[in-house]
Length: 333
Image (tube, rainbow, N blue to C red; front, top):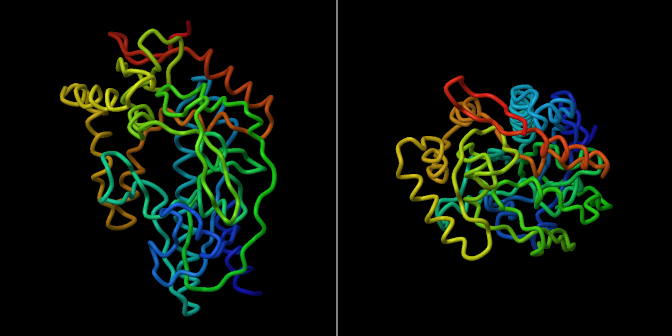
């Protein structure tokens, strides 16, 4: 059994659904966060891992029938990624190679603009270069088998591993439902940009400020506007400007809301870029306390377009989560 086969066997035993391999050379044309040497100076290769999310739990989440089944499944996907990444990291080190398994989330470079949230390594870029999938209109990793409904991570190593073939195909078909289901107006419906990875050019939406996504996915706001017919699983309502015009207006409005002690979730969100993760125990502590309320752009994106349309219907007819004297509940309108 060669080294790649050993790595794949470990990954499969620990519940990983997709494994891919890439070289540093394949990422030479990628943005800076795709450079493996940013986390390991002697990097030659990387292993990409993906875990698929449970479809039944996703639909119950989108339709506001059950929040926690998806929340727990999503968290468990990262537990699997962590255990597999650390096992593969150990396998490589035992073989005499350098290896590092960067955190799959919550870890950001400190020398960046406000709320840029740039990771030391983009696991999406590594996955694309490893042949697991491609970048869709949303900017998420899209896989042929699971669409965007995967969690991903990477292991970077000094070992020389043969890259896998790049993924072929494109399921987006200009459906743009990811943009239609984004309450924060983070994903543009029409403006685009390009990214080069492994000699290929991928076109995705030209995203607005990351703060738009963080405010909503962080649970600090659940609606696209105060009178919206549907919400995320958050009952919070912030009256925030849509993307027409300057993002600076949006940022300033968010900062104003953040001064109010009542907006606790927003204050936590605004502190995201200051997270310090020193070890996996700290990472686990953050993950344990995470309560997912959104992620619509990823969750609706299944390979079959009819499934995507059904997911869109479930979300947009699911009603709003509200909080009143009776507690937190779903109101369908």
